[in-house]
Amino acid sequence: MYPTAPSPDPSARRALLVGVARAPQQILEVEEHLEELAALAESAGVRVGGRTMQVRRVLDPGTFVGRGKAADLVALADEAGADLVIFDEDLTGGQVKNLEELVGRQVMDRSGLILELFHQRARSGEARTQVELARLNYLLPRLTRRWRHLSRQTGGIGVRGGEGETQLEADRRVLRRAIARLSRDLKQIERTRALHRRGRRGTSTVALAGYTNAGKSTLFNRLTHADVLAEDRLFATLDSRLRRGSLGPGSPVVLFADTVGFIRKLPHHLVASFRSTLAEVAEADLVLHVVDASHPAWHEQRDVAAAVLRELGIEDDRILLVYNKRDRIPGPLAATPGELWISAATGEGVEELKAEVRRRLAGEGLGGEG
Image (cartoon, rainbow, N blue to C red; front, side, top):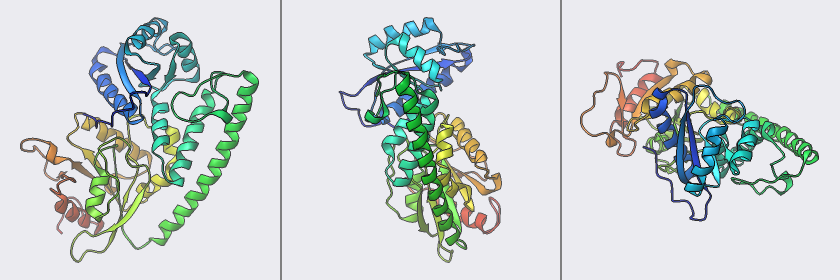
């Protein structure tokens, strides 16, 4: 169950989604992944015309799915009225090129779609710099003769063309120069952020992290009485936000940080570019790992976010697992003692969460004496 994005414009591009299961027992998992891919596509303004799946134990190095399946995609895309084919996998530049020649349509992979969505959502100068650097690093090894000359590229999904090898080399030089400039800009942003963090020494920081659309921003608003954007859609928040909040009468002021959500197969270029933003999480005194407990795939989403937190070097003793959206779960809970179940939307369990945060910041464990 993924959030329903606003209906794309009727004139928007239509896409055929493609998933690949490596074994028959993975079919249900891949179907769930295609649901998420559909939500990502619709969030990016693309209408989903259809979806298909293939069970393939050995991937084809040239086309990923094999020429037979590529031929099938033509008929499926015709039936769906799709002029765009999106794979729920990462493809090489060669695979994209070969598939586009066989299918006769633009082909995009999962990372490319996520980067496009981030590009649309970036608002602050920092977010735009981070996303553009990630996009260019992603594009550089994938440039082919089918890419339109960069000086005339208008952005958005599906800008294609082709002007020959000489122009291809010129475009690569343009990309490398832009990457170098953006990298310098981002280093300056990181230095500025580091100075700000040093200026906050002496104030405890609690960061909110988790899978995208887990309800972090809603919880952030409740803890800080802020009014930041908290929509039921993927990647509603890209920028980190800092607000002061209270854990109760007599408690010292705490600084809460809300930042970008995680997702399955988050492009590594994006993680690298967002390290200045994610540093707010990595250097926090305590991290609230917020899980959407109402989601059918909450186990996987929890594990994906936990893996990113480990990648950021955050030790388990600095992480507090918080199961959110209790109000969407019917019936009594079979909660394990010590688990925290809340509803950021209604406030249920938030006072217990604050008490646990106070204990953690005071150096006591879950369930310790307050």
